[in-house]
Length: 167
Ligand code: HEC
Ligand code: HEC
Image (cartoon, rainbow, N blue to C red; front, side, top):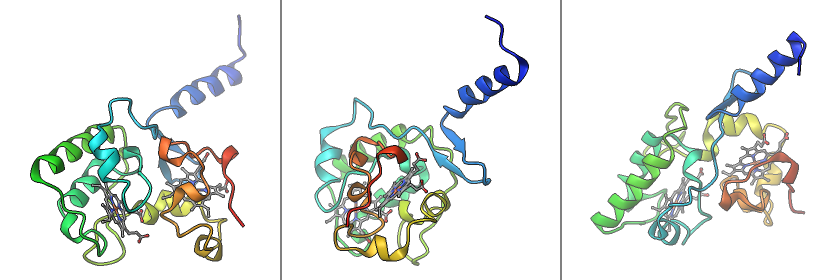
């Protein structure tokens, strides 16, 4: 089959866009490979979903996870400490599974806190149409509760075709 030059170029761009990062056309990048790896340890699923939803490793760069896992005794004001060997198993997994994420380390705006997903530039960019009031709705429970609006967030599905903000 013969494709014209513009179509061939478009196909090439599509193929490239499916890489670990996608540029949304505003100079901001966002993580792409967000699905939970099949070999994700049960320990991580159990320990990291007790107080909030389970966050896909692809949502942060490895260095952010490292900082977070190094400060579990003061985890955003909570104590989420683990046994050293549990901590090691989880950080090894997070670092490995987030390797395709080449986004820069972005410290939290709150001093002394490890980095947050909900404060990254790509997060802000993707949600600039979502008002603060909507994030504050009781049915939503804040910016970090992705699963309120992205039903399958705990499987790493954030497709905007399936997004629904609860009333
Ligand atoms: C004892 C409760 C608790 C446990 C256990 C816990 N967390 Fe948290 N985590 C919190 C709290 C509280 C926040 C802040 C929530 C907020 O401000 O909305 C938080 C926030 C986060 C955020 C930032 C969310 C954002 O705003 O982008 C990430 C990422 C995170 N936790 C990862 C983990 C990981 C990984 C583990 C497992 C090692 C874990 N958490 C275990 C209580 C916990
Ligand atoms: C109040 C509901 C709400 C919450 C909570 C929320 N989002 Fe979203 N998100 C949206 C909406 C609405 C869009 C679509 C925005 C648009 O298309 O303009 C979106 C878009 C996205 C996109 C882009 C999807 C695409 O196909 O381009 C990603 C990625 C994303 N959100 C990740 C997250 C993550 C990660 C969290 C939690 C840390 C989160 N969202 C929390 C409502 C929410």
